[in-house]
Image (cartoon, rainbow, N blue to C red; front, side):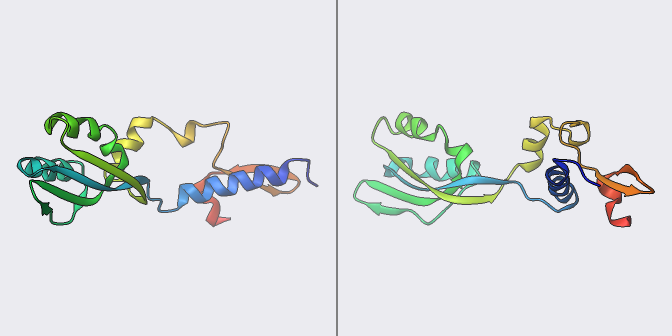
Amino acid sequence: HTEGGDFRQATYRAVRQGLRSGRNILLEPWFDFRLEVPADNIGKAMSDVTRMHGEFQPPVTEGDKCILTGSAPAAAMRDYSREVTAYTRGHGRLTCTLKGYEPCHNAEEVIAGCGYDPEADTANPTGSVFCAHGAGFVVPWYEVRDY
């Protein structure tokens, strides 16, 4: 027989078991950007976007300004408007909009940095509870398919 909350617990365990056994991809938010800088600064702007693991279209020249459009990880562009203001002496302008989510370019570093150990998380176990002969027993997530 079951107790209150058993279905909820089974649901949580099933989701966590699926997360542990799946081939997950860590995503990060990306921005589409439009960057206007004096023509003398376009080389630095293109280098900066490349360094941020971003991508861009060929620059368009309009008078003494160049316009660079593309996309880059939001985390890398977080403080970039201040840099643009500094290296253009106030003559540059950066506009960003949310593009969506792309695979994280440094997923291993991000995962290691959070320090989370799913096996040590006793409040959210990944194993499943099976019953046999009137008793329940826990099966580790990596052995569930064998049962």
